[in-house]
Image (cartoon, rainbow, N blue to C red; front, top):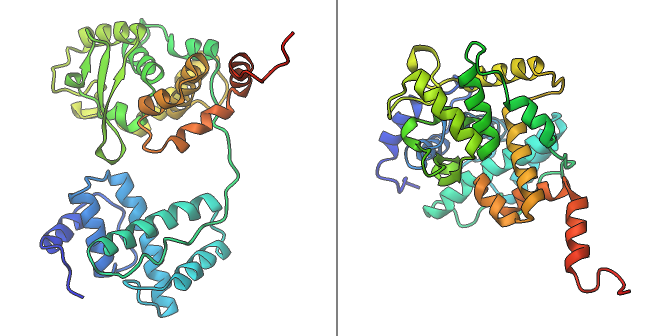
Length: 318
């Protein structure tokens, strides 16, 4: 069936220039067109594109070996693919991610009239055990973010950590920030999150003060990265991860500290104080509130106290 996307050929050429790992599998045209759609129209990040490419390469390789038309398989074929990946030792979590990419690919083909039904829609991966994210308690978080400003790069490090903890940003969001995105007088930051979704997040007073001091030292122009790396470009995620590990050890926190730990701590502490799950969802930029609900398990004692105080039949009346 001819491709219904008039720009598919040009988009495919653009996708081939994306900064992704070199493929070991020659991708079928439908998969290449879908990846082009993700890059050009959905503006997916290089990291997201690399993940989707890896998952769909696995599907294409399996389909070639099994003699299945990857462009139009049946539901039984997708179940066989998932079973094959499971036998290869793929974890339930990895299988869920892989199946999500496969569903997205066939959903896209269905939307463009190239399939009668999505063969992956009813297929489920094995359930993964639910792991609760680690968090820092408020004292540990304060110890981490209050790095000495007089140390080499101290102002930068403090501004970075304060902003992570103040606003619950993702690592990629913090690395991409420019000074024009920060509105320190209003205490707000504009963030471009997953899927190109924009949101506005509050910035606390300690973070605003640290950011002002860092800007005065770095003399950052409006269009400059807030946290520049080599050559004045945006700092790399890997550099932030390594720096946080060093700073945690220097501050006496000998646990695995990483950028997402401060995001988890931000969400847990805000939820504990407010009990507003929907508000935390908006602050974190989660598309689905089910993603945010994991934080309700982190402070069940607090929620139990809210229930006892609020529910008319939670306790016997004296």
